[in-house]
Image (cartoon, rainbow, N blue to C red; front, side, top):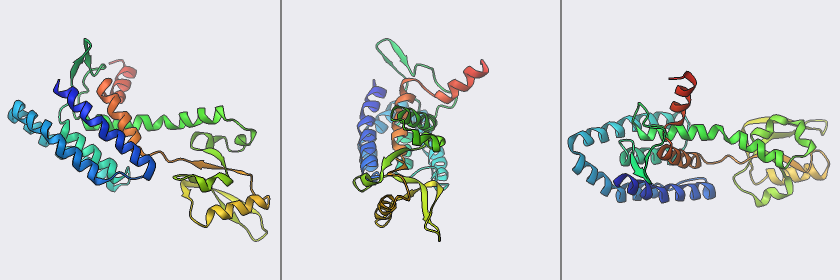
Length: 254
């Protein structure tokens, strides 16, 4: 029962983190402080009922996850808000949550060999992220235009939108750089990490369209926040378990 309460407690914080990350592309540190402070009731209860063995698991999970997440953060794998969220999860869930609901034992796929729940959340989040290109391709297929065939690989990482609409949109990045050469011809170059719009670039693209130097539509990428993947990773970890572990062992026939 306590595990279900912890899961129900955690979900609103993760959903609000997704909302703020989508809207502002950042998650306030206060959110994780409130989550940890209010969630400390569960930690105290678990330590009281679980004793020294649970306390050891709590320390082990907190230290291992903190060090690992900090290294990944320093390497630029994800943002600070994502890292803090995973660390808080490692404190609230030092042991993998196992519970009965409607006669079913969760997680449905069983416990992974490494019982660090925060790592499973991260693994599932990475797996969900790899599905984004497929979703992007399906979106482009539903909104297909012949111009997409000029850059077919872009269909997996972005979509086309009118230059005139860019001033009303936020949190988008160009997939191509547009540079005017000495002959007045626009040269396109792939922007590997996505080219952020600035105050001068949007009007510049508009001028290129007016002069007929580029099409009315350009390729952009939304750059979805990783917090969405973390939340999806949390849900799948709770319901199903470690998806990567299960997929690998199923492939090996173990």
